[in-house]
Amino acid sequence: ELELDFLFSDEVTAYFRPRVFVDALDGDLGRFEPFEAYVTWEGDGWDLRGGQFVENWGIVDTYNPIDVVNRRDFASDPLDAERLGELGVRYRRTFAGGETVGEPTLSFYALPVFRETRFAPADQRLGPGSPALPFDESGGSEPEGEDRGLYAARFQSTLDTSFANADVQVLAAHGPSRTPAFVVDSGVLVPAYFGTDTVGAGFRAVPNEDAAGHFLATLTFKAEVVYAAPYDFDGSPIAVPDDYVSYVVGVDRSFYHVVDEADELTLTLEYAGESGADDAAGLLRPFRDDLIARGFYQANDFARQSLELRSLVDLDVDEQVFELIYERQLRSIDEDLKLTVQAQVIEAANPGESFFASLEELSSVAIGLRWDL
Image (cartoon, rainbow, N blue to C red; front, side, top):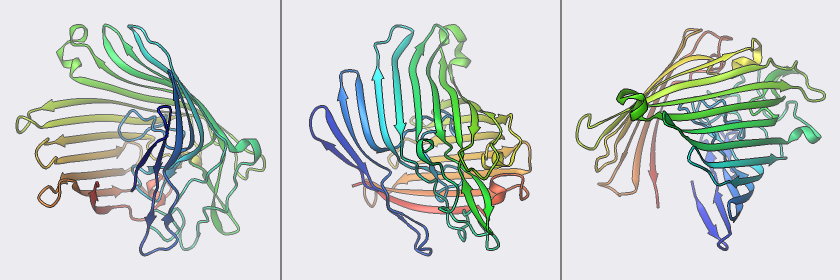
């Protein structure tokens, strides 16, 4: 990973974050395009950004239905696939706020260039194909002409009331879905893209102790909800997927001085659900009836150790996911060297019952070293 910032003037800056991802055992799995490469022009209360960029609209921890701008690279991580950059422009305008509504901001996006969602090759464990049904990422049905562009708008602000302080956002988007359906064409599994009109909202709120009491003031409430209405493109080989509502609600609570004077423990409980759709395309959305529990411990010590444990239980089918992530700075070697150990255990449902069941063995252990220069 490499991050470069450029300052051309007080108003014009640029940012470049290239990506090189190579599988040493499979030459078909390689990524060489940048995550981000854009120029930003800033004025008084506004900015204009053009190029390839990543937008994170998510609020809750595990799954973000409101995060509709960027594609994901489904060859990277089955639980939290990496966001990929999209090519286009963003105009953002910030207005003067008041005592209740603070920093209201409007953002508009025009992403006229269609980009394929990335998947692992068929012989990889995260690949959607199989030896009997090979997968061709580039052989599917794609939008043409005006259907290729995604256009979106988002409003966000803070909200300060006597009962709670919150961050809120409302969004709308029109364009190709970032997760296609799949069809069989001449014995090959290929993606079939369709469009989606999306409206949604999200918030993060912390109650005020004076109005809500001490216990509620220790909690952080979070939620995301979207209504998605798919539509087809000319010549599409699939039927239009069903409309659906997807939502995630959750609550955090932090505990301090658990083991010593500096540490912090955050416990999270979330529920991810969906209603309205009963078609094959819905199986590609992995979190439709799931209860999620997470514990995140930060020692805040000299080694900056942290430990994260997460479990996901599907309440509809027999499927469980468990994840552990441990990080620490190896300061005895170098102050900027960090060790990461990640373990995932995925006990998938029966084939045809869920997204994870369509893939091969998913459990894994990853060990990484990161050196920030």
